[in-house]
Length: 185
Image 1 (cartoon, helix red, strand yellow):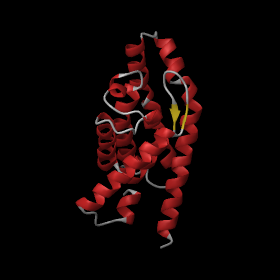
Image 2 (image 1 turned 45 degrees about the vertical axis):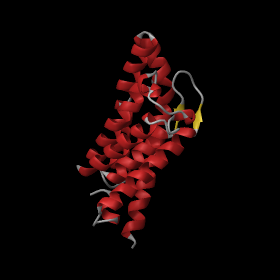
Image 3 (image 1 turned 60 degrees about the horizontal axis):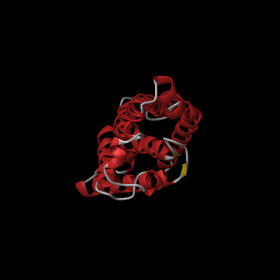
Image 4 (image 1 turned 90 degrees about the horizontal axis):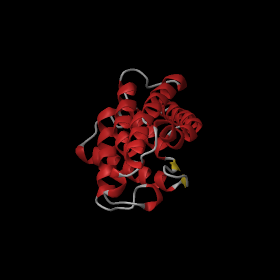
């Protein structure tokens, strides 16, 4: 069971729609908190995605990320550096953007399969998809920029590894705290 299912056991279409909207707002805000790096900026998006996956479950998390990508594709300034439009979906960061959907789904899937409580389980459910995100990210970076594999890994993975661990830990702590508050009700 996910945290949102426990907190809102009888969710309507309206409730799910509001959760998706809240998730896309969180993603848009987290994209603007960034450390400028080239060609991939370091943002808090993966923290937001972990929180969404750990809280919403697989299907609602994936729908939230698809909605986020659609908002960006339509030109809303929801991507890093307040960018929008279709260009980011086909540029150097495209593998990360498209990979966000899989990351959210896998995080939620793991939660639905028992990685739902306790710091260690929640951390594993956040870090495994977070590390797998580097696969499409580095592949797209290589294909779009023409970097070799080592260059793509150095630009799109190595600088982000420590941050990925820290963000997974923060997400796990936050969701664990959410469960603790819900259990006290």
